[in-house]
Image 1 (spheres, rainbow, N blue to C red):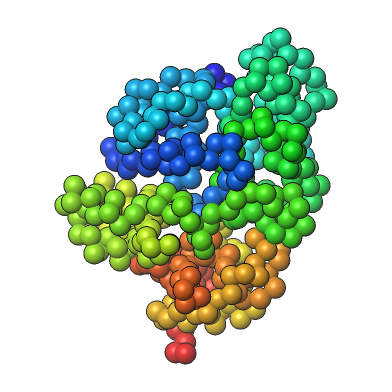
Image 2 (cartoon, rainbow, N blue to C red):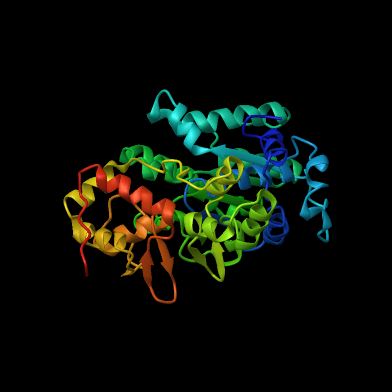
Amino acid sequence: MGIHLNPGNECFAEIVDSKIYVDKSMMIAMMDDIINDWNKYICVSCPSCFGKTITGNMLSAYYSKGCDSHRIFDQLKISKAEGYGDKLNKYIVIKIDMNSEYQEAGDKTALIRTLEDTIKEEMRKEFPEIDILNEDSLAKSILKVYSETGEQFIIIIDEYDVLVREQVEESLLSEYLSFLSGLFKSETLRSAIAFAYLTGMLPAVKDKIQGRLNNLEGYTMLEAGKFTEYMGFTEDEVKNLCVRYGMDFEECRRWYGGYDLDGFEIYNPESVVKSMIKGEYGFYRSEILSHEIISDWIRQNHKGLKDYVLCLMAGKSVDVNVGSFLNTMNSFACASDMLTYLIHLGYLAYDQQEEICRIPNEEIRMEWMRIIKEFNEYEIIDF
């Protein structure tokens, strides 16, 4: 059992044993179907605190050979699914939390090299008979293990987009993209990887990075597809919690719902759980990024964003073209790009049929008030 290679199940076990746990384990049956499928490289993007890390921990706990997870999953919904246990703890898992790696790196410029070296060292300990060289890339090391043992890898990368969001230097970003490209664009390596599961707030970017990440199958707050019910809490799950804790469901919906995705109304899981435990509705949202960028945009009325925000604050919806956004932090060509970015981060909700966006709930409305009050803007324009 290593830090990155074949991690244990402690993180997920702690979640399952917590006071409130909403069972999302049937997602594993869907991932079983993805294994060795052509579209087996998955990128799921949704706002912070919508359960991405918990899902990554669940998949790691289920598939990792570094632990025995029968006790955990035997009590969950997945245990009733056909084929349950066939793939339980049967794969070599590489799990990376890119946000932690970035935040804890002493020398940011050496981030990718250090990460690769750490994982390769764990591989040497796990497979001492295989000659993994210092100059070998992680992709080449994986291929060596697969060639010698026939065992496939599952790669889980949480917060894969942190270097994009942090707007790191071009040299570091380029090195990181080459790292990802080496793992997911190589046809030689493809047979060695059972599936890859990446999470982030932003989808795979489309401009100069497109050539390196265009084979990731994306599921987003604009189009969640088969992953919709796993992007947050569903209406039925929230109703059950409200019954269990004696809370008013309609009030819960007003505070934390409003994200309509492919036939589901999705709720912010972290805020719902905190409200159930505290027994009252209020603002529980963790800060998802610095308000400084958004405040500057509004203060300068960049691309007319201030006018749109004030319209949204008045309870109205605005048109948005989500197709032009390139999923980067430096390619905002128009107001629609900025609004699309805010949809991905959960500040706005998107209506796919009407192609409009709006403020989804009371908690987010309070978040917008906090942003606006930073520069004493109280005006609400009547459009």
